[in-house]
Structures are given as C-alpha cells and as structure tokens.
Image (cartoon, rainbow, N blue to C red):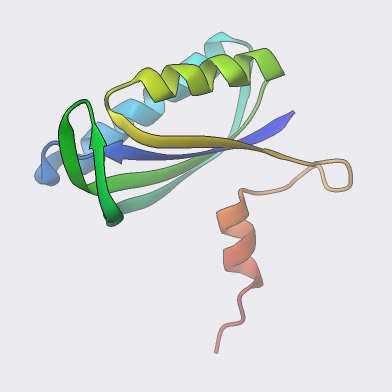
Length: 121
C-alpha cells in the first residue's frame, strides 16, 4: 500500500536545522527499508514557524522542520512506524495517510500534485 508521511521535526539549533532533519529522514527511511518497504519520494518543506506553540517532553517549540515522505509498505509496518515516530522526542507531530493507487500507479506526494495543479501566471 502507498502511504504518505507528514511530520514536523523539532529544531534544537536553528543554524543546523537542515542537518537534524536529514538525520531524522534517514532514520525513518532506514526503518522503512529494513522492513521491506520502498521509498518513492521525499519532500523537504523547510523550517517554518509553528501555527501554535507545541509542547513535547516538557519543552515548548515555536519552530519546526516540515517534511513529507511517500512510501510503500505493509499495514503492520506502517502502524509500527507511526508508533515509533510518536515516541521519538525529535518528532513534534507525525501523521500517515493512505493514498489510493488503483487508477494511477505513478502518483506523487499530495504536495507535488497540488503544486502541479495550481495555475501560474
């Protein structure tokens, strides 16, 4: 099944936020690949201010590094991945959505589909 992970990673050092996000994405990718999954796409959405102050592990966070990842894996692996991400103190929020691929087997991440469909002047 094709899933799409959307996550917000914490930023402990604003000057090194990209390096921290790369470490987190590589860890998630290794988890998927170790469980016989396939990574289709990774989209870095950059560091942004959070819409509201988030608290995790008795820390308040004002900024987060957003990223999306499209991957194929089994349902049990997806559930275990989400459970692992929610326990990870480096991840502020994580959500996994299932995409239907019956008609189009080459679907991109929803962010890419929305970007391609917006009219440009």
